[in-house]
Length: 389
Image (tube, rainbow, N blue to C red; front, side, top):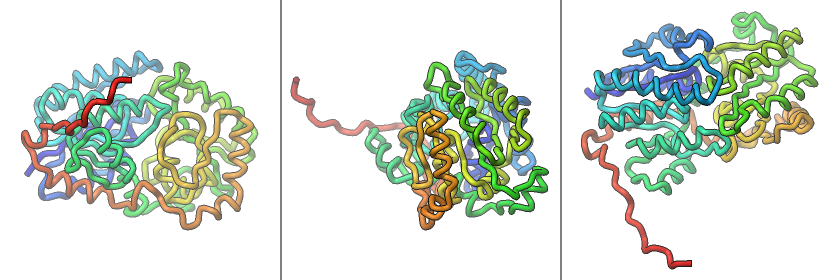
């Protein structure tokens, strides 16, 4: 039996990993070792480690690393603190494989530690593009340090091959977050109303916006968003931002906005199944969250995607891209809320998969060869040099 360690640092990656963890836990070929770190252990972000425990997963290690900071320096120091903690954890654990997902900046720590400890890395959701955030560089760095690539789309898989990754290492599996929409029982309207003590008589606009980490002023797009939302005459349900530089400022602005409107609410944490249930009942999703790009198409949910954060990602027809200017946001939202636009999404396919990613991922992790064969990444043969200009 091989050991597979999985690192989760936030509610976002845990929601994507949930069914992968279920499949690993049930596998007769794998011993799951779960490492919880980052925002999961932060009271400010809801101590979501409690959700992991409530879901019945055993936690093998907890790594405190998230600084109570709202700056880019805090982000950089978080990477360092995570590296120190994970060096001890992974050094003692020595798993056969380390499984990481996506593109959060703190994932640089486990990948670098694993590289030094000669622990092969399997990476979910490599090969994507998000040019407007540091996530893009992080994802590509993880690709370079990983040995098994679990790509969400055919385009992402081709991009990994173009980056020089060997074909046998690259697998198109889909996005595992979509497994929730096929396998989890999403709450219906009445259940959501009971859980949140709110009415869904009028479908809300859900707002999920995060700092723009590539911009010097990471909250510069928020002015236009809040100006536009002030003109929206329907319930507004906000989700907490990610723990990036500028998140505290966004939280404070949202709290101030909600205090002035009786139909606005801010949720620190919605567990994944409840969140998807809310999106199923929503009128539209507004902001710059990847959930509007990856999961919302499966719900046929209109999305107004603002600004640069998701620039370059594959998207379905439900996404309306708009610059961070209040008039443009309001115009896009009016289109998104129209019955004609909603009807136009009938029959739309989600490029991120069919909700069966977790099973594919675990089969690959059960069968991939271990040892030096996996660790030794070979460079592709190069053609002759170009002629001098």
